[in-house]
Image (cartoon, rainbow over all chains, first blue to last red):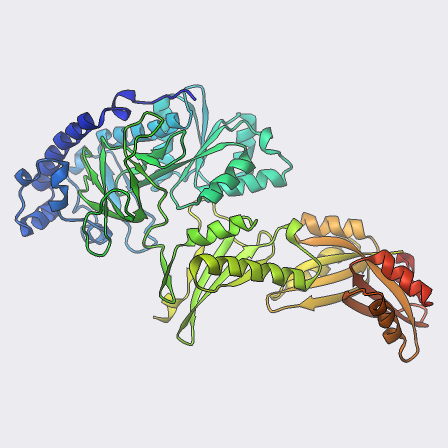
Length: 436
Length: 142
């Protein structure tokens, strides 16, 4: 396959040259933050650090971490590093886990973010000849704006659909011959399901690729979406705190996401000790923004658990790849002392032939944790005997036990009885929190 | 002559059953026989109706899980021990009964029993040889 890049020079830059570029940018960035953000200056002063102590990426480990709680504490302006009059936009996290975090952007910040998204679109095979259907939510959420801006930079025809109204999504997809679709993987799965119900075959649409992110998803779900839409499904990664989607993206290899290292330096740390871990070890992903102006976070802890891969990629890009995160450490459930990621359960479901429509409920009964998994039964799985269905439940339960080491109660439920998501799917209900 | 039966997945929660019967009534479907197998989470409603295909379409269009399969119907005379005799015939043939349900025949001479077995043809011929009358869809709908 012929490789195309949006910014070939920097995307395929030799490693030594890239490191030099990162070092230069980092020195300037630390200086900028120290001078403009009193909150971070105080953290550095506490450690006896001055900008002069950070000569380059190899000194990064000396700098203090930032986490979501710092951003909440400094809400709304405490992390702003330029005068408000230099900012042109804000975006915000959903705020489901507490106070919202607000991120600020100068025009320069918007441009670099959109360029990152443009790289992702070109890596997925996009060009000015494509029709890009953006069905991420628009508004405070970064998904819609990011991919929309990226598609503009590429010069593609952009359909600013936002999320929801699936019938209209399908009508535009068919009538305007969309070739690339961007949304959350759970919404992509739902669109695929709806197309099938309407009697469309995967070959009836003109889509060739999808760029999916904003929530953790599994390889099994990727195959499912690729089959139901007849496309190649690419992962994209980002978070509002670092700008939005496009911090990392998949190339045609579909084997890890290239981190845009000319803008962001990634580290993997032990989430308990904060120690930097060697390449290839699993830990928490930490990002340092190298050239954002308004909201330049240094060593921001993402809570995402993953692994970095520095082996050369056949696509020619030299930037490090991150594996699909297993999930945000915030999403990790501790059930009877065992760490459980919802994505592990999703993998089992799809491998056992179920659709990825499920709900996980965790509760505490008589001081013991319970795990209930609700999964939709499909028409071809339904049988008229109770025995056949309870056997299916037992088999699925055993398969999950095999992976997690804890025994769930599986409930097969009617199709469509589990709520569909047009944005980020809410699949876990932890009732234990209600008892605390 | 096997009888067509509808099996419907019903979640074990309030309003689950009435939703199905309402849907069928709304489409002018008349029920001839029914039985329910229930578990903690769900039930399977088994129905014999006057228009199986129409009922299936109506339920599927509303996202209900439905399966149509064929079951064996026989008439059991109103005498002590007749059901046992029928079941012994099947047992002797090595035929396993997954489930059965019974209802009174319209004529009032006995009961109709609906049997779900692996192999309908073998069960029917064994029962007929033993003197039982198999029941057709027309009998059931009387």
